[in-house]
Image 1 (tube, rainbow, N blue to C red):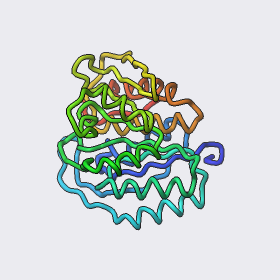
Image 2: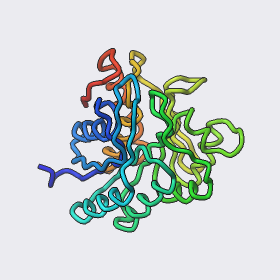
Image 3: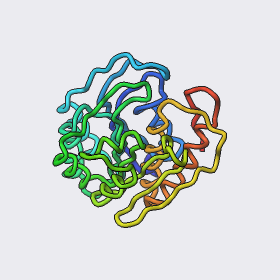
Length: 251
């Protein structure tokens, strides 16, 4: 029944545990009744507890996959996860924009895995700015967003600055002052998104699930604020689904 559902695309890593990456994204997409497509940027060996090894996928292979999928489907929204460099990311974003300028792009700014593996450096501020101007939303947490600044600044100030280029969802899982409170920055405004469920357990890949939920909801024509609010409810249900690091997906 895919003809009745919008197509969405995850461009991210393959996690054999299914907790993160394209497997987690496609589980989330299915629960939202959108049709999930996937292109992997990396093969990994990992569990929910430890990261062992990674092999990056050749950029040209990824770009060819993007071209083939966009030639065959009208893709309303794309989520981009782990990438090895800003150049690699920029090539993907530029290719999507050239093929389908109206497609929504969300960059889940995964700079380090939950098990401690570093993926991406962001020192090239010129290229970073060019990328941010082409995407619609980024979803950093408090630990990630500080790596987007060249000088010391608070997370909220960095988010405010970045929101000149694209919308910024500053995730509150590492919020030192109000744990679980997210902030959505949209140009000259910001919105405080309060948690509603305190009975949650840490999950592997929760950032992937949240961003995939936002992608799905925006593909279903929700605006960014409504999508982020509803995705927060989805991720809280996911986090409270059991007491292990691998959550269960349900609406």
